[in-house]
Image (tube, rainbow, N blue to C red; front, side, top):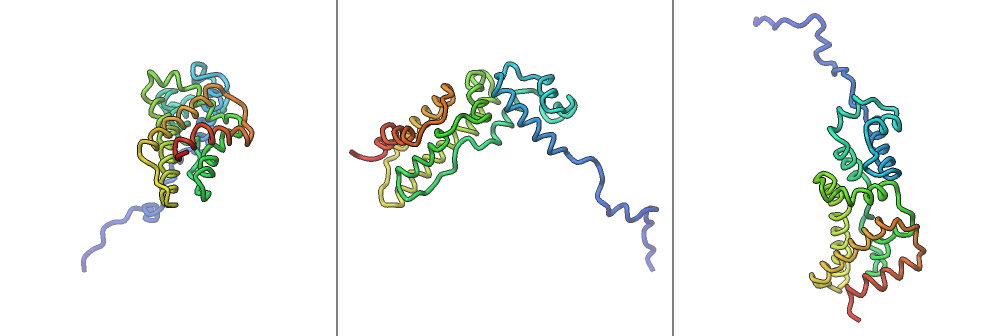
Length: 205
């Protein structure tokens, strides 16, 4: 009979999961939201470890275990925010565009104010530039593409050059809203933007 290998004194301990301290997701969330709020209120230049620790009640060690610098923290915080609505299929091209511009009916959120505050610094910070691309530029392009595809399924295809032009215009309007920090627009004002600045680029006459 083959002898069984020796077992540790506490064999059951081998099968028990380790009880090391798990990553504190609640703290991570506080740091991310705290960073967004501080940048929205005071600008990126005022964001530092002392201010964030005071705002969130965290410790420096918890902060620096997660991010090596403030730019990386803000970039992570921004890309987790839904800054562009998901594409809606309302049954009409105009309705789809109105759904895209729904955020214009509300004041800027803290995340949108943060995106606005990063426009200047992103010119010389690759992490921030990448975050703006991921949070705004790429989702906007995807929604415009989805709107055009939905219109094509309705039997009204949109030429590729018009789609590209609309993508440029929508992005410019998005940044303009961020930079001016305008209050929420009325339903009629949003309809004017769509009817005068966007819809004519996609349809004839």
